[in-house]
Length: 541
Image 1 (spheres, rainbow, N blue to C red):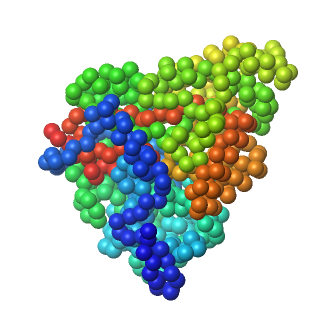
Image 2: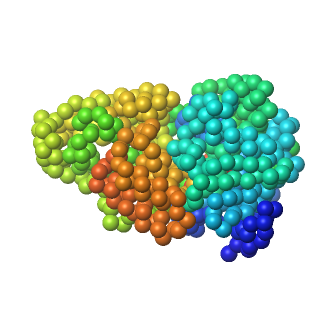
Image 3: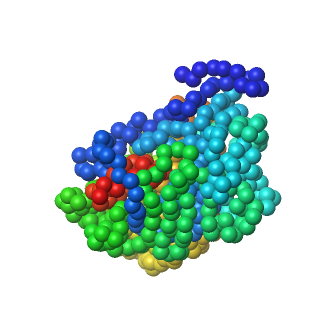
C-alpha cells in the first residue's frame, strides 16, 4: 500500500516512489503467459554473459510509418519508441508501470489530481532542456485544437485515451513538478500516459520549423534520429548523452519489407538481424535452426471483421449474424495463423479484465447463415466488396489469404465477394471515412487494460465506429471512470455480451506475436504491448 504524505499544496496524497508501481492487475497474468511460451522458443535474452558493445541492429518490419510524430502515429511505432519517452512506461515484459521521464508521482485521495516529479538534467536531442514547461507545452499541443502546433488527427489523445473529456488542465508547479487535474476519475490514467503517443517532442524544434521537425524528430530517448527513406528504412544512432541506461548498439536500422517470406529470407541470408511477423511455416523451420531464436509476445490483440453499419445490408443484424455463421473461423485460424493463435470469442483477449466466459462468439453454421439471409429478404444472396489489409499484422498474419478464405466461405451461402485493397495509409483513411462496407482489421493492445480496446472501439460515435449504441457507450465510459476493478470487470462483461449479440464486429483471432532473431541478438525484452526498447539489446558477435 502506498504511504501517505503531504504535498506542496498541503493535500494528503498517495505516493508512488521511484521504484514504480503496479498500475494493472494484468501484469502478473501476462508475465505468466509469456513464461509459458519458453518451452517453444529459444528467447533472445542472455543473463550473466558479458555484454558486447557497438554494432548495428537491423530490424525488418512489414509496414512503413506515415510519419515519426508519436502524437500522430498509428501502427509501426518501433522507431519513435527509441526516440521519444513518456512520463511513465511499462516495466520489462509486463504491463506494470514504472517511472520514465517522471521519477515519481503522487495522487490526491479523490483521484482527481496527479503531481509528477520530473528527472533533472534531461535534455532533448537538440540540447534544449526537458522540464515542466516542456511537458505543459506538449500537453497543450495535444489538448487544444486552436494550438498552432495541433496539426493533424490526434486520435490517441481523444479516441484511445479519452483525454479530451478527462484532463481538465495541466499546470507547472515548478521547473521539475507538473500537476495534472482531471474532471473525473480515469481508471487507466497511468497506463494511458505510458502510451507511445504521449512521448515528448522538443518544443524548440517544432517552434523553429514544424515541418522540418516532423522530418527530423527530436525527443529524449536512448537513440537519435539520423535519416528516413520512406518505404525503405529509418536509421537511428546511439544518444551518448542519454540520462538512463546507455545503449550498447551504435546504430539501429529499421527496414520495411512488406512480404513475410522476403523478411525471413533476408534474416536467413544475414542482411537483417531480427524480423517481425514471419509466416507460420517459417516459425516451424526456424525452431530447427540453432542460429535463430524465436521470441513470442503474449497475445494482447484481436483480429476482426468490421462492418460499416450505416451501409446496407450490414445495417441489418440478421445479415451480420449470417456473415458470422458463414465463416469457418476455427479452420481459418488453424490454417493461416498456426499454433500461436486461438479463435476469438469476443473483442478482448482471455487474459483481460472483463472477459466474459459465457460469450462463445459466432458459431459456424452455413445452413443458419442461408436462413438468416432469407429472413432478411436476401434469399438470392447479394454482392459486396470486401477490403483486405495490404500489410500483415500479428492479428492478421496473412491478410490476403485470410481475406480469400473469408470470401470463399461467404460465397458458399450466396454472398458474392469482390476482394479489394489499397495502400496502408489510404486503407486506414478509407476505413475511418466509412468507405468500406465490410473489411478485415484488428487492434494491438497498448496498455493491457480493456478500456484500450472497448473505449477505443465504442466510446465515441466517430471514426471507424458506426455502431450507434448509447447503452454500450455508457457502459465503457462508466468503466473508464471507475477506480473499482470489480465494478469495471462487470461493466466490461456486459459490453462483451452486447457486442456478441449485436455483432458490430466479428472477432476472429488472438495471436501470440512471433519474432525471429539471429542467435547473437541478446537482451531484447518482448512486451505484450509492443512497447520495446533497444538500449537493452546487444550483439554477441
